[in-house]
Length: 386
Image (cartoon, one colour):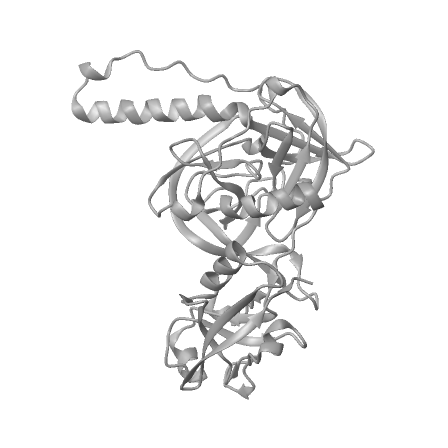
């Protein structure tokens, strides 16, 4: 199941630059010590300054609480050739570390560096290219491990202040702040769909303007309670450094922690995770001209452009467009998905977010569709992504 990318004239030319790994050659800085708490007393300051100092104290406390659980991850080939640098964080007290799949994807050797100065080689126990999550196991004394507290990404709101801690450009223990800019975004996953001309979609992505740069990949995105609400994954940018590294432009993306909660236990136990699969490609947020060309009378929804042969959608009776239009490779007459299990679908992002957060292969869903002027419900048994 994926979101079909066509009609490039209507799409932005911005390029998603996956923050794979920091190019080697820069010497990582030593762990940054937590700063000393401010000495001024709040009672002696005017109200506005009191608010600023209170906010400052909160940031200082978050860093002191969380940074011991944030690690640097250095990867290399079997012959010792360095590949790059990313971030990660301690998931559990028994030595499991969460990072991005793309940080360790090509690695033969994975080194995990702790803020305490300890360094150890880790083993990749599981990876998920769909969500871009990987789990590393390390064997270190318990005193070195500082597991982070997990939040609830269903409770986050646009405008909420967030904090990122990681190792951008090899600068260990760097903290940046911003807000949640949007929720429920969709990005391409790191796994090709059948046919090799498109990628599956990763959903329930958090957008933030907290500064993220190469090397931040795999680090935690936190709320003001110091709880992990996301795993930093990518940025969207049109700028690059002299060496070709993408630079922050205020649009970053993180995997929601509720996806991590579903995926990581499976990676630890089985080494992989199976996603629910509809077997469709779809378009949404279409310009008015195309909506009129397709004969759609409702603006919101996910318009089905193709259905995988013998897939769950075809077996359930879902239809793609077959009637030629004036737009190349766009057919009219397809179904418009407007709800799933009674939850409104205004976009493909809504559909994917519901599926990956609530459903597993083998379970059933009820899709409400608009076919011409007729509204109908179709019962669909979910498969698993091939």
